[in-house]
Image 1: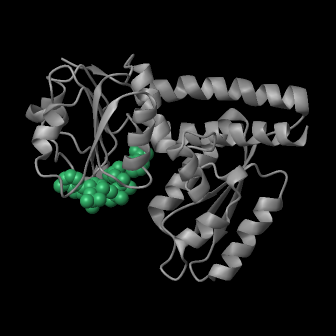
Image 2 (image 1 turned 45 degrees about the horizontal axis):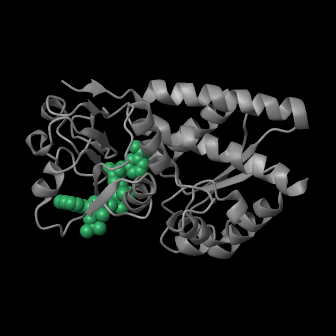
Length: 286
Ligand code: NAP
């Protein structure tokens, strides 16, 4: 029977450490890290997400600046806002909530965010730095996955890690971070010939697909550590992960629940990156 990796508890502990550091910055430099959140349109899920971010910032002493914009805003106007936030010294991190309306090219906007303020880690420079093992910002959900492995006492070194999903925001960066920690990494996707066979060899399994229960419990190698990133809202209103939890927990040695696993870590890592951006800005100005 697997131990359940409690993302809420891990996030709470990391947030406590972030708050201590934020308090330290206030004492030593008289400054507070600032996060600008840009939200275009009225997608209800995005609004809830942004509200949660604002609340989390407040709890640790990070200032948050919300920019709620109508869906009719032009790409040019949005670029102008991003450029002004790039110059604003009270803003250390900029988050542009995705998805953006179809008439705005998301890649143009993400590229306009200063790499110094790219706390989402979506700028091509940040992504390139991750590939070469450099020091840029890392995307929040993959960082959360790595923190959960650490919290579960799982060192990836020498282990077979299988990542299911190859998106730029989850699958690919998680695979690179596992490789950096010396795991032997396999990345699976929709054209993988036998998902079951690949998964059955995983000592560490990270799943980020977005299809509830697609990974069956019986595919999992006994003793594997399983991190389920997927979130799907079922017709019943409940949230479900990509891994069949009830059967998987009888084979894995540790597993994340959905909800309460990776989810709480994502916002927590956003706070971590905002704090890092503020600390980096002090270093640059010294
Ligand atoms: P995405 O961009 O849609 O990517 C999904 C990936 O799954 C793709 O690489 C796709 O393969 C692969 N896939 C689809 N069907 C498959 C199948 N039958 N077998 C194997 N691979 C398959 O999704 P994402 O943005 O990475 O997100 C994935 C999930 O994580 C979603 O449920 C999302 O809500 C969740 N998520 C959670 C958090 C959090 O904070 N908890 C954060 C981000 C994402 P192809 O590349 O071949 O199409």
